[in-house]
Image (tube, rainbow, N blue to C red; front, side):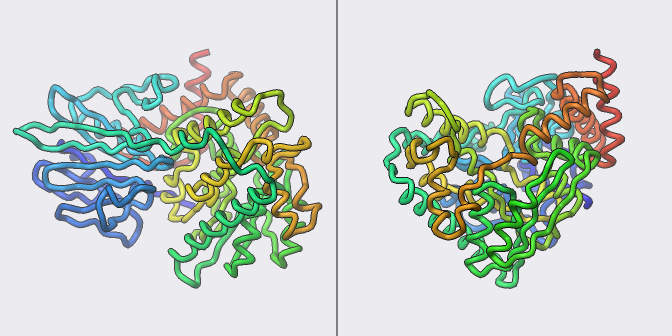
Length: 474
């Protein structure tokens, strides 16, 4: 499939290079550049509010948008509210001496935006220097739970920001200590989130799920199918293993036909530039976990008209070590820390589906479900060397025990795929550090963006150029 990046830039500087690539609204001292979904329109006059996830105009104010990120544009101010989960990034750059600034939703716009602000364009060459940093010097990612405002006052543009209470701080003392009750409560919350998604889409909508051998995607598939949605389950097979038999077992119980998606090594490796492009970062753990679903998206394995539901996010809030001598407080800290890291990693961002014209939801990654999970004691989640014990306990009342209590092999997103990709890169780049290759991909994509080309293009050409960069530095 062909991707077309979607983005929004709000700035007080002229950016001529973006005018031909996007809808341009001249609001006097503010300029808006917007490239949204096909058929959507953005008002030419302020005030208006843009939903950061969908990049469409919405009603209300930032104060009405507690659980979503929005950009509101008025004649003399820009207000940005970033959700507590922070799935979809908003970037900020400013030259305080010149009084220029920009908010934008795509990091790869930086090579065109920064010069317009009077700022140099430089990559950091490594990981972000701080939690709000990016791989582009001078560009920060707005942190979760922040309301930032840049307003015109006495002839100057001034920025102020306030942090809202971080709801993660309320889950240090989980009180759900019965596995069955905790699992059923989360099942109810998950069903409610799926119902909310369905209510916001057309009745004739068809759905897809990504089904593996884990209980998470199994719960999503089960709840979607038993709620009456038209569901097609897909399961990914890679050269390093598959979960087709386990996925087919649940489908047989539900009377659904499983659609296998066979990915070759080349198809997975060729997805590296896309993964780096839409993640906007190069952390190997994040990039490699995203490769299978990036390949599925890039190859069009799931029709774009189907709304895709995944089990992503559950590992963060429900998993724990299978065997651990860690104390209860340490296990709680591990889960809260995993959620915190993930809302800064872009791994659950919607930028890639948006570029491909697809709609993807992660029902586990919603506050109603997260709250129940974080209220659940660690001893309910991990027991008898079995992870997600509470979810399995609840699901065992709906599906056969062999399905509910099957141990996960973690093939497609785990060690098998990661090790296979790394062996390939080590052979091609003569480097044992995969992040060098991902950084080189980022640099190649950044150079393309500087020329006004915002899509990855030919993946093999990009990879070849990236590998050449790596080899010359060895």
